[in-house]
Length: 65
Image (spheres, rainbow, N blue to C red):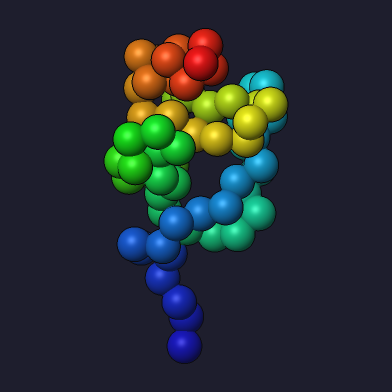
């Protein structure tokens, strides 16, 4: 039986220009807000902290704190 990646969080390795999938899934969880972020909508993350963020504002606040 094939397993679907729907509703499963992905594990990613964040790099400066993208990310690499370590384990399959269809979304990640914002490190600050807890919001679910679809992989095709993921635009903001911290390479140093290896964390995804739901928006530019959230990323800015997280990185500056």
